[in-house]
Image (cartoon, rainbow, N blue to C red; front, side, top):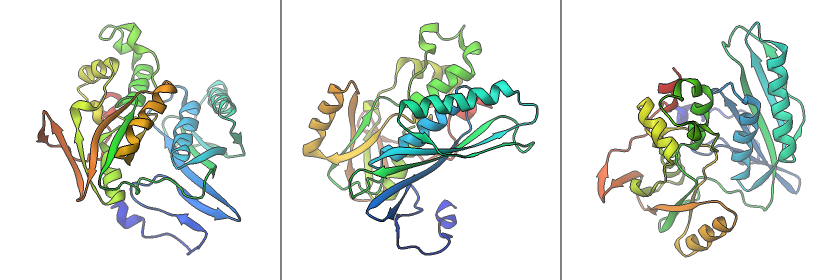
Length: 291
C-alpha cells in the first residue's frame, strides 16, 4: 500500500535529489550549491520526555543521510484539558535537546484538539548535507557486510521503562529501568527492499541487552521487533568493516557484524546456521505492552 501511496508526488521538481521511496526515511533537495535533507516524523509511543524524543528521532534520520541537523519545527497536538505545565515541559525538552545538538527551533505549530487523547509531537527536521552524495538505505551492494551499533530494541526499552516503570518494579530490578538509547526487523526488510538485495542475517549475532531481554520476556514481546532508534544499521564493503567497527570502539560505540548482503531479494534469517521465519510485521512490538 505504501508503494502505491508514494506514486502521488505533487509537482515535478528537478531540485529533488531523493524523493519519496519505501525504506528511505528522508528527502534531499538541491538549493543552489547546497543539498538540504528534510525529515518528518511523529512520536506517538510515549508521553514522557516527548519533546526530547521528537528531536532525537528526527535528528537521527537526518544525520544518517550524511547531513548535519540544523533546523527543527515541531507540530504539537494536545488533548483538551492539557495543563499549561505539561505544554511547557514539552517545549522545554525540545529547546534543551536542540540546544545540545546545535539545532535552531525555527517555528512550528501548537494546537488543542479533541482528535487526540494524549499529546503528540510531529517533528520536521532540516539539515545540510556535508558532502555532495547523500547516504541512503538504497546503497547496499552484494558482498557488503551488515553491521549494527549498540543493540536491538534499545529505544523501546527506554520507552517501556518510562511508561510502565511502576508496573515493572516488582518484575524487573530497578537497576535495569534506567533510560537506554535507541528495531531491527523492519529496518532490515526496509534496507533489503530499498537496495533491491537479499540480506543474510545471523540472528544469534544481534546484541540484545539484558534489560531488553527481561522486558521482552515480561511483556511477551520480541526485542527484534521493538522500536530501536539510536541503533545504526550499516552496510559497508567487507574490507572496510573492521576499520569502521574499530573507529566506533574508539568513540565508545559498540558495533557488531550481523550478516552480509547477497544478490536476490528479502531477508534470510538464521539461528544456529538454520533458516528461521523472519517476516516483516506491520505493528511494532511495543504496542503489546502499551495497549
